Image (cartoon, rainbow, N blue to C red; front, side, top):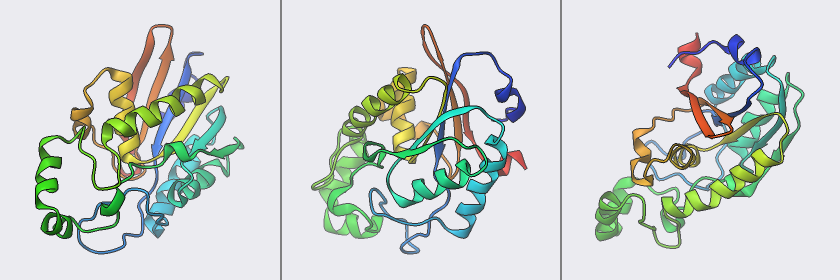
Length: 215
C-alpha cells in the first residue's frame, strides 16, 4: 500500500499514530520458530530497514516515541529517532505475546511435544494459551490499555515501535475486527502503519508499508 511520506508531514492537524514493527531479527535457528518475548537483536538488514525509516520520518513532527523494552524494538526506535529528535521511552506492556514454554522452540518441536495443544491453537487462535503463556485475547487486553494511555499522554503525533502480534491485535481493537482475524493483517519486518485519531474514533491510513515498497 503506497502513500507519500511528504503528505504526512503536511497533512491536517489530526493526531497521527505511527505503528512500526521492529526490523528483521537475528533468528535463533533456521527452522520456523515461535518467537515471543525472547530478546533477540536486529540483523544487519534490520538495522538498514530502521535506517530507511530514520530518513523518511526525519521531517515528521513527532512528539514522542514509545517502544517495547525488548532490544529489537529499542534499537529500531533509537535508529529512527537519531534524526528526528523525539524522546524515546520504553514500556514493557508493548512486548510481544508471551509464549511461555514454547518461546524460541521450533514449530516441529512443539507439534511433537504438545500435539493436542498444537491442534487446539489452530482451532482457537484467539483464545489459546500455550503452557505458562498468554493468548492473543490476553495480549490485546494488555496492549490496548498501554496504547490508549500513550495516545492520551501525547499532545502531538506518536510513534510506537513494537511487534507484529501487538500491532495486529491493536488494529483489530481499533477497527472493530474479531481478534481471530488478526492474521488477515500482514505485518512484515519494519512495516509502518498509520492511524489517524478523529473525534469519532480511529481511521487506518496506511497498512504494512515497508522499506522495499518505498525504494
